[in-house]
Length: 219
Length: 365
Ligand code: HEM
Ligand code: SF4
Ligand code: SF4
Image 1 (cartoon, chains in turn purple, blue):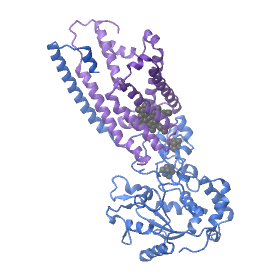
Image 2 (tube, chains in turn cyan, red; image 1 turned 180 degrees about the horizontal axis):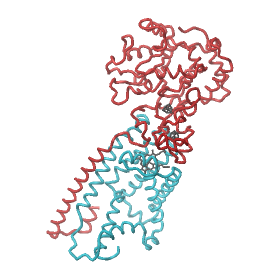
Image 3 (cartoon, helix red, strand yellow; image 1 turned 120 degrees about the horizontal axis):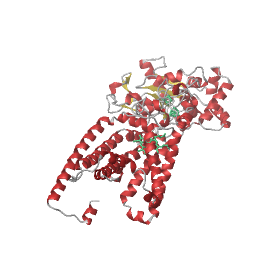
Image 4 (cartoon, protein in one colour; image 1 turned 30 degrees about the horizontal axis):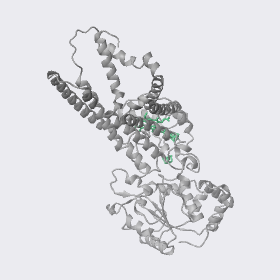
């Protein structure tokens, strides 16, 4: 298998397989949660559900002061690399070209140097959180194999993207093939691990806000 | 026929000045990544080289490669070097036809056994394909290739069709076309890919063979590293625009006029290894990207099937759209089913006043 065969495999059949597994898996997950619904609340509603629900989706982006004080590192570094990851994924021009060709939706991107800087920050952030996880006795105790697996699965697309962009792996078809494969593994693993939080976090926040909203309390 | 005349003599006879010849040698040295001090050695070796016999076989091809070579800004030294090569057999260029032509080929093979070069342009129907898709003088391409290479020193596959199968091999490959390297296993094969290859690269490879009598160092695709060692993107003069993220989005927008990077117009330069960016075309006049046109990746294997010409390099080659919709619909249906089932279960559990312990809960995590 030459590097070009590998790239064409990653860009062709493997990509289709990966997005199909991803779409199937994530929709099973989300529709299962939605169809499950919530226990019926017989008490009279004291307030609206929808507005507080949506508000909470947004409000949870801001850590409450207590959490910030107790886990400054997690909040700061965690936010940093999450933001970096999402921006690189959604605003890098080659990615937009890919999304546009697959979903028919496009938007303006960021200049490459900015994406590149964010990539570096994301990579450093991910390494830092891993070290922190190792060093922190409680975090270490709580960590399962799955936690390390999803760290790796998240780290590899960013790392291989950086290596491809800077042409640090030769020949280039191998570099790009590895990057695309890493992204595909990320997509395949996503619906079946904690990575589903990318979608379910927002659902959970909404439910949370809605439940409290109904009770007339701020969540 | 091969004569004992040396290349130097022939060149002088063709009116090539010593200066022009040395200039060519210097260019060859730099192409082969040799220090300029090697130029005189190359000149000496070339001058004394005997005209090698070359048998040129054209199979499933469009003659573009021969055109590229013979129409390269004439008269260049490269051109003349090529003229003085004893081209004993070339379907397109030779005057003889039919039996006489085949006879010339056979004679060259016996006279120069073990020494001649075979140049192939075009792919050919493989041994299991219908040979009728391409024959010459009633001989199948496969048979002619295998017979001709028997006494060859090396085989040079000129053009992407010969090197990798090219257009004839593109999906769905109706003629069962294969490349030369798919068939020739016991002789060295040098792939000079490109659709067509840069003329200087063809002559450069021949010149290197003549000069050193050695075969060039090859990359994973059997291409000489001297010419195919660097990607178009790494030598592209538009690279600063790529690095700044300035892209032309249509062929006539402001970006295109300002000469910005052609990535979004489908440029395959990042994955393409060829000498266009440094050696340029038409005697060094310009090259596709300089003319505002994205690189198609013509020197790479499977370039016809490696993504649409005007789609970015990052765009997948399949059409996952339909699959995505189907998978999504199935996923949604299964999800709703699973959710409703769990709902029933929990309803029954409530009715039966089932209890659950912390350990049981932990198990479900
Ligand atoms: C299958 C989906 C993907 C494809 C086809 C793809 C394609 C690409 C391409 C073509 C590049 C440019 C490389 C270069 O310029 O040489 C790139 C860079 C990059 N990609 Fe992806 N990518 C995909 C998914 C992802 C994912 C899921 C991530 C995770 C965030 C990611 C992160 C990156 C990063 C960090 C870079 C380097 C950016 C830089 O350093 O400036 N990619 N990708
Ligand atoms: S035009 Fe093509 S080869 Fe040149 S910098 Fe842009 S992507 Fe690379
Ligand atoms: S620029 Fe690209 S497509 Fe054009 S001739 Fe060169 S390698 Fe081939």
